[in-house]
Amino acid sequence: MFKLDEFLTKMHVEELDTLLFRGEALQMGLPRVFGGQVLGQALNAAVRTVEPDRKPHSLHGYFLRPGDLSRPILYEVDPIRNGRSFSTRRVVGKQKGEAIFNASISFQVVEEGYEHQFEFPKNIPHYSELPNDYDRAGEVGALMGIPEEQFRSYYLIFGTDILEMRTPGLETVVLPGEYEPKFGFWFKFNDAIGDDPITHRTLLAFISDKALMSTGLRPQPVNFRTHKIIGASLDHAMWFHDEIRVDQWIYYHLDSPRSARSRGFNRGSFYTEDGRLICSTAQEGLIRVVGERDD
Image 1 (cartoon, rainbow, N blue to C red):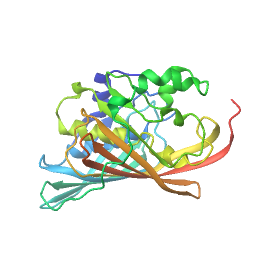
Image 2 (cartoon, rainbow, N blue to C red):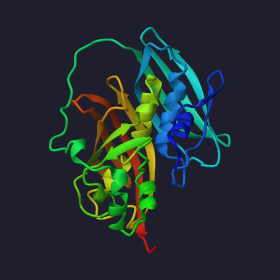
Image 3 (spheres, rainbow, N blue to C red):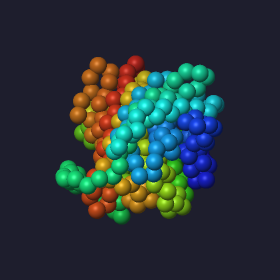
Image 4 (cartoon, rainbow, N blue to C red):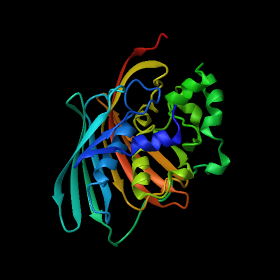
């Protein structure tokens, strides 16, 4: 797929001019640019246009067109507001002169205040009790007749030099069934990513798009392996509650309160190993089931 150095280089977008950045596509075995790449690169561009004491607290993005893997993405940052405590940036990602992504990202000077949070979800196996997804790819792929490497591309399982993942019930991503609309996985990026806070937030945005949209399909006896499904992320939101360290184990808990009218609504919560809720996500995705697969 790619190595850690290439991954970090491409997620840290190139500054072409003031407020103008360029991001190269990651080749992940997908037919179009992975949405998490666009989220991470857009955030990476915006963060580099605000003062270091201002941290991102919310991101609201819309996927407008599929990303072309053969072309770079230009990110135009508009500094629409700089206040005493908050700054706002609008980011537009473009290919061939057309917008493929649009986001509004808000930053705040860190301050103290009252706190509460939802507790870590119950009955989640600890990562130390679970095998590595990379090592299970052959076994789980065989359940649906999928070659090992194809399953890794399908479920976005990276080499452990980049990212280690451990997923309770990994087999449910290929075996159709009527499951609860809840899912989740443990993950940890390689220690070699370094200490730059921008990198950690960029990579959290990247991983936030993984498995989120498919959560809304879990209650149905279909999945992307059994049926022809037109699926696309429509929008994606993130709220950053605390400091982010993605080189430490994090559990990404996903649920889908509602699906209707060919759209699925999905939510995600990032918890540290000691139970702190550090970030929340929400996304609506287009899900059109057009027939059974015959290939």
